[in-house]
Image (cartoon, rainbow, N blue to C red):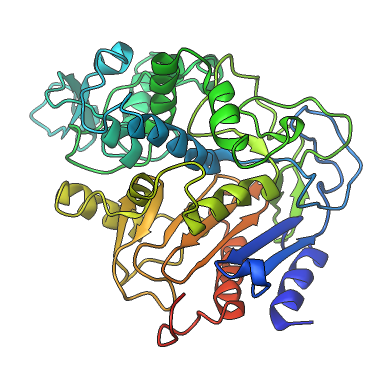
Length: 434
């Protein structure tokens, strides 16, 4: 038993971590060098509800059968589906999307100023004041995929959250997620926080991109991704991930847990059971197994051409900000320096990052073992994934717990990633690469 296995097993046994599914591979997995799959713990802790708001008896975690709520892991298959249409010439990365997404095009930009004692309302002295001004720059598909459109999630601290909080304080509606669940244009029809291309903030760009796909192909995002992403990867129809809750009586849905006051994970009833949306959201909420998700990682890592031609797939791994939107790259660096909500990403102090069309991108050679071009991202429930083409490794850390960026889970995630490089003999950059 390795020290890494003992570390993970102890964390689960002592309640520091909930159930886990860890899968990894490398370019030589066919010959058996690295083909790793381990599970720990159960699908639920006592008292936890599953996605259908039903309490369930704990079942052993299974890479093949345990169904996770992927949250932002959903962004990767959505991005791949979008790039298929770019490859076919049906969408352009740099064309204005106003005609296809008029609801988004109608959104203004929040202009933030600070009130002073010379203003009429002395009670607000020193507070930020938000006014809406017309947008001038075009919004493109590349902006949506790279989080440079000006869209921001309303629940992340920032100008948009402050705008709605001030609106609610003045007696307005504010932002009520419960009233905005049905469709993308209703939930995320929100003002921009900067002109497109002049900043970076994490937001619902992939949700709007998914709606753009639907209006381009004339079918639902859910149906398209099943047909064009999961089917080519050999996923059986009954096992295909879905953007909608999947009814099941098998107890395989993974329940959500959260860290309690004593530092241990406890079941959280109903936390993963929001009202079902009326339409698919391309940036969140897909549900599926980790074994299925890793099929996508494997295909992209091997660059096998099953989903995308090599020149198209390369866009996922190429820096999009540097030299194109330098202000956005600076904003990304500043955000990462204080982003304690991120999981699966080592503290970025001293490391260079950019954004590829598929996720966060290592953009430099300062990381201990990640190579330049390593693609990484995570979800709100602390699952995370990585693809390092240069080192030839990939993997997914599957879990379902809160809070986002939970420190003990982040430490286990980083230990897992380092162990993958070690098992593949890629921990030292001095070693020859695949």
